[in-house]
Each structure stands twice: as C-alpha cells, then as structure tokens.
Amino acid sequence: MKLNKVKLGNQGLVIPNIGLGCMGMTGFGDADMYGKSDEKEAIATIHRSLELGGNFLDTADLYGPFKNEQLIAKAIDGNRDKYIIATKFGWEIDDNKQVTWRINGSKDYVKKSVERSLKNLKTDYIDLYYMHRLDKNIPIEETVGAMSDLVKEGKIGYIGLSEVSSETVKRANKVHPISAVQSEYSLFERTVEERGVIQTLNELEIGFVAYSPLGRGFLSGNIKTIDDIPENDFRRGIPRFQEAHFYKNIELVKAIETMAKEKEITPSQLALAWIISKGIIPIPGTKRRKYLEQNIEASTIILTDSDIQKLENIVPLGTDTGATYDEFGMGLLDY
Ligand SMILES: NC(=O)c1ccc[n+]([C@@H]2O[C@H](COP(=O)([O-])OP(=O)(O)OC[C@H]3O[C@@H](n4cnc5c(N)ncnc54)[C@H](OP(=O)(O)O)[C@@H]3O)[C@@H](O)[C@H]2O)c1
Image (cartoon, rainbow, N blue to C red; front, side):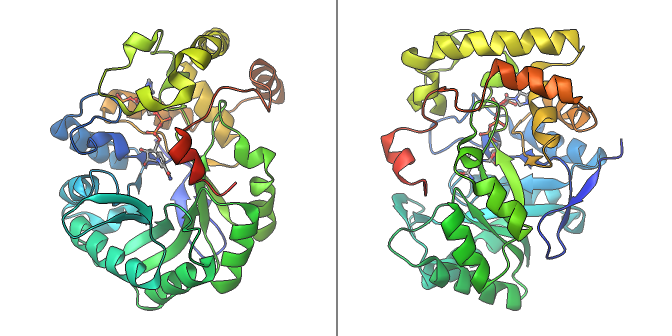
C-alpha cells in the first residue's frame, strides 16, 4: 500500500499521513495502559507498519518510563534510517528512573533528557522532539532555546510541542520554527479547535498531530460497559470513562458504529478518516498487527462532505463527553 506523504510544518519534515502511537506497547510501571501488551507482537506491529509505509513512530521518555523507547530501539535495530521517530521530554524523571510528576522545561533538563532518549533509542538523532507539557514556571523561550541548540548540534531534526495554547505556540515559534504540535483530538475531543489552536497552526504553517485519535479506544466500539476496561487500566481514572459520562458516550459510539456499517468500514476507520479529511495527522495507538492494518487502510478512505456533516451532527462541536484526564492531568494542559 502506498501511503500519502505530507509535510509536517514548513521546515522540511515529510511523513506519511498516519503515524503509529507506541505508548500502549509497554505498560507504565506495574500498570497497563490499555490492557496487557506482548513484546513480540508489539515489535511485529512496528515491522508491519514499515512494510505498509507507516514509518512514523510516536513515543516518549515517560512511557515506561524509558521502556517504550527501549522497545522501539529493539524493533528498529538495523533499520534506523527507515523510520521517523518522534519522542518527548518534560515529565521529570529522576536518576532512579522515578517520575517526580513535575514538569521540567529548564535548559539543563532539556539537555539531560535528550542524551537519555538518544541512549534508550540507540540512535544518534531524533527526528522530531516534543516538549511533552509546558513548564508553567519556565518561560517557553528558555525551553525552545535549548531545543534549538539541539537542532544545531544535529541531535534532533525538528521541534514539536504538546498540549499548548495558541499564545505559547506563537512565542515558541519566534525562538525557533516549530514543526508540529501534538494534542488530543478526536470526534470526542475538539478543545484545540474550540480554543483556536488549529487556526493558529494553519496561520504559522505548523503541522498538527492528533493523539488518542480513537478516544483511547472508546471510538472503536469495542468497549460496551465499564467492565470491559481492565481493573489495572489507565482509562479507569479518566472522567470520560466513568459513570457520569460513560453511558451518554456509548450512545454516540453506537451512532458512529451504525454509520460505519453503512459505509462498510469499521468505526475506528471512520474516526481516523474524519481526522485525515481535515489535513490532521492521527497517530492511533495499537500493539497488534490486525488493528494496525485496519488503521493504515483508513488513511486511504475518502469521506464526502455529506459524510463529514453526518458525523459532526452525531457529535457536534462542543459536545460534553467528559474530561480527558483527572484534575491533576487537566491542570497541566496549557488552556
Ligand atoms: N502527547 C501526549 O500527551 C499523548 C498522550 C496520550 C497519547 N499520546 C500518543 O498518542 C498515541 C495514540 O493515542 P492512544 O494510544 O492514547 O489512544 P488511541 O489511539 O485513541 O486508542 C488506543 C486504543 O485503541 C485500540 N485500537 C487501536 N486501533 C484499533 C482498531 N483498528 N480497532 C479497535 N481498536 C483499536 C487500541 O487497542 P490495542 O492497544 O489493544 O491495540 C488501544 O486500546 C499514543 O500511543 C501515544 O504515542 C500522546
């Protein structure tokens, strides 16, 4: 299959129009992100993705911590140059590999983090390096200034930011051109659109990467009751998956499923094709080849204007599907 290639930002980065989110391939400490993962199948998924033209991988030092980058190193061994690797820093991880749950955007921490990620990924360059969250105690100019030094040193190719406001992007872009912003975006989560971030990115020619494009699996239609979410699963702590919102959201998923059935595609494919129709790059996360193949196929589905309208009537902009993080996590977003 030939995937469409697109420019991400205006600094020269070219990627396929869909990426592979790797976060769920490793757990977090003792907890699972989205159910049990199997290293062999995860690595096979990364290899299959490359075969299909899907060479844009998304990870972060936080995932594991470090285990995810290490898994990717194993998977891409001998083929580094064929992949485009995006990783992230900013959640502070101490020298004992403990996450402190503070955000650190200081110059020193940027420099320390990149060396650690390079080592864990077993590479001498990172294609796209994101600031995972804004450090509200450090001017963005300091953080991006340090990232700019890494570009000059050849340690990273391009600079990205995650979950930032229009104001922060504008300030950052004055220090060094930003190639991509990554934030949560799906039929269930359109805050960046409501806050004008997407418009700012278009004006500044910065690419937008949509994380959790399947609403962390909600939009796949595979989750029917709260009990379908394993006990030790990250989603149990997210209001969107809790009693107050869950059953309302399920009704929306059912309507999306009906529409997908009519089009003879899966609900996940419909949710991804909708994102791609907007010129946005989704990075659906999966740890199995079966889903990966379906997701990559979604990148070739073309929706008509009336399909898009129909979907947006099912979940209109502004629909309250519940918060995407607990209170602590919401407090770290820059909105
Ligand atoms: N910047 C940030 O702060 C941030 C935050 C969260 C995530 N991310 C990145 O974004 C990536 C994607 O987001 P995400 O993984 O959180 O959520 P997601 O892509 O919305 O959903 C992942 C879930 O959907 C399931 N799934 C995937 N494809 C499917 C298909 N075709 N049919 C049925 N189910 C399917 C996966 O199942 P299996 O796991 O069983 O395959 C997994 O449970 C992550 O991997 C990570 O790299 C970034």
